Image (cartoon, rainbow, N blue to C red; front, side, top):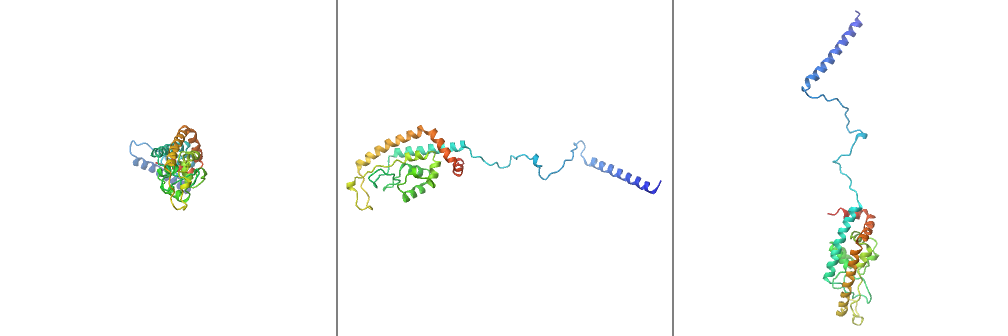
Length: 240
């Protein structure tokens, strides 16, 4: 036998012996009776086509019309109750400023109109006071932006309904007894005041009936308008 053939034969024998030794070692290390787990390829991350969404991951919430409608319905009913309480109290602002009908936010005695009272009932007293100081004869029908518009959009009422609630006031002073000095308070005529209170009670009852009767239709209008302002819609829909 040549030297080359001898070396080749010895090398092959050594390889066979190493293989048998490795298998025997693995059999010794394995617990008797334990199943053999086939070796699988390892990935630091699952392959893209195998990935599944994890139930532990935060799922981005979705703003639904149903959630916004439910929140607005709750707000509408709360504000309707505030309006009813305002009617029952029967203390309405006195228009001592103009001889014709006028929207008075807050009168000289500190009495607020119905809309302002509802806003205050929602905890927005600072806003209501600021409006009185800056624009006491404001018409909510003319508002188009700002915090008052935000309240209208989230009140559950339409802007037209808010305008109905903010009924302007007849004057309750007689021109002949108005002070010449505008800084002096006007004298309220008791008969005019009583007549205006009676008129307002009737008017407010009519407004309330309209609010109840048209709730479904006008609530849908309110939802449509609020959905155009996602930030406000999220705020009211996610409120506790």
